[in-house]
Amino acid sequence: MSDADTDPVSNLIKTYHSLNANVVDILPEEPSPLEFMRYVAQNRPFIVRHAATSWSAVQSWNANYLTTVLEGAKVKVANTPAGNADAVVEDEDGRLVFVEPYETFEDFGEFLASVREDAQSANNTRQHVKYAQTQNDNLRDEYSRLSQDVPDDIPFARIALGQSADAINVWIGNQRSTTALHKDNYENIYVQIRGEKHFTLLPPCEMACVNEQMVLKGRYTTTTSTNADKPNFTIQKALTSAPIPTAIWDPEAPTKNQTPYSHLSQPIRLTLHAGDMLYLPAMWYHQVRQSCGDEGFCCAVNYWYDMEFAGAFWATNGFVRDVVREQAMRVRYPALKRDDGE
Image 1 (cartoon, rainbow, N blue to C red):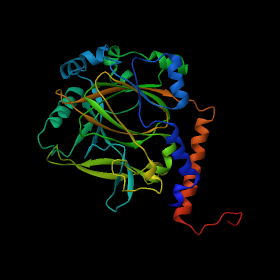
Image 2: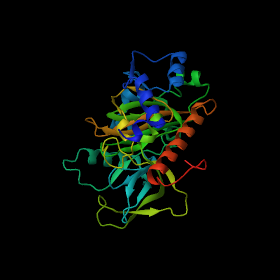
Image 3: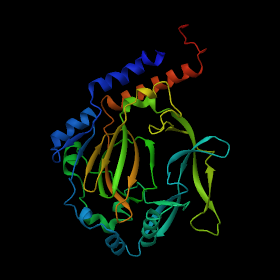
């Protein structure tokens, strides 16, 4: 038995899993504000199947409708060589870099046509993946013509949390776009509109499993290419910015970049279908893939509500982070001694 199986961090993870089932609750209907607040207090996710099937967006957002309503609109598009926007990659020297996408403003109709063509390609050889994922309240900004098709807020969340949504975002892409493992300090109500989303979830207490490292930021840039489907992507490092804490462990490749605690992780995997609603609690790690239907694109809308920083939850997460970093230092540098002479 390794030290990681008997130390306090290990005990925290194992105790959590002994008290919490490794499944997500499936609710028969949207919760009341009081019921929702119980899930927020426990920091536990849930799904409501078919919760949004009556929304105009779920009923009408096919390719023809979106192209017609957004005719002439310019939208910001994330461009990457492999669909891995906001992800950790190795640069030419083998160093890890958190790379943001190369962003362009494009005509929406041309963007959606490119996404659909790419999704329906038999060999997927295009080395250029496009994804609408600006995460800046874009549904009430560049996609405002579509805002009438979704609720202004999620009533049970607005009442329970005492606030309106801080941001409402729309996500449009195909099966080649993925989201790397990360966490957000928002209470997230996520609604699938078209296609399917496949989530891998880890609770906040598994921080020690994800191998969070301080990584330099970078951004994809492109150089001139004669083939628009194969631009020459390069990574431009932001050497003047401070490194950011980033999870580098992938629960789908568990033996790579693992920590002494990664084997204790119990990932929860779930799939959202069109019309399904997910509550993703603040600070939960999540990794996302997607699948397209006959329309050749995936689409979702999410509502972000700022988490509550008062109370013990945020402070406790910070404490766990500090303990995990201390444990990691002891593993890497066992000769280090504490001031008490240990």
